[in-house]
Length: 127
Image 1 (cartoon, helix red, strand yellow):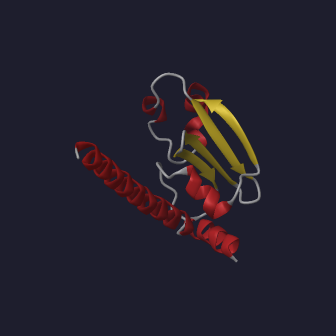
Image 2: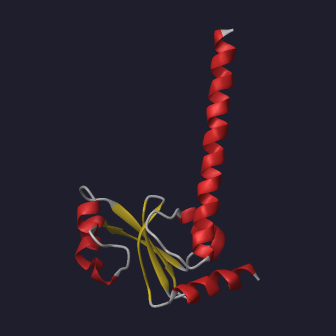
Image 3: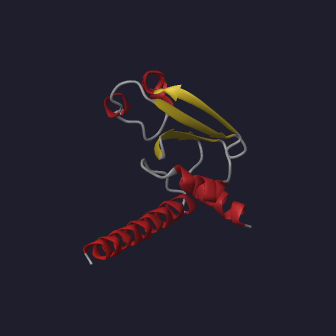
């Protein structure tokens, strides 16, 4: 009996975590569709909304901290990273947007587009 109780509780916890994860992903995708870029957005939400980037690369957090002045969302980036971490850089050339991720989370971006222009990108992609 104890084993089956444990299994039921474990399944319940997994279900709740999946439900919460789905809600968070919906929120992230909604922000991208609204043209609102904020740190912490999940990179899978960008894949779902904008598709694959045109180019990707990797940069170390040390290098990024030294040239991050041109990036939005990177205030305090030198203090944000502890040690030297690899960061993924996604370049959407056709959209004129560059995104920087630490693992799955957006840490910075660079674009000259307004929020309305970013919103239009997602709208065009859905058509």
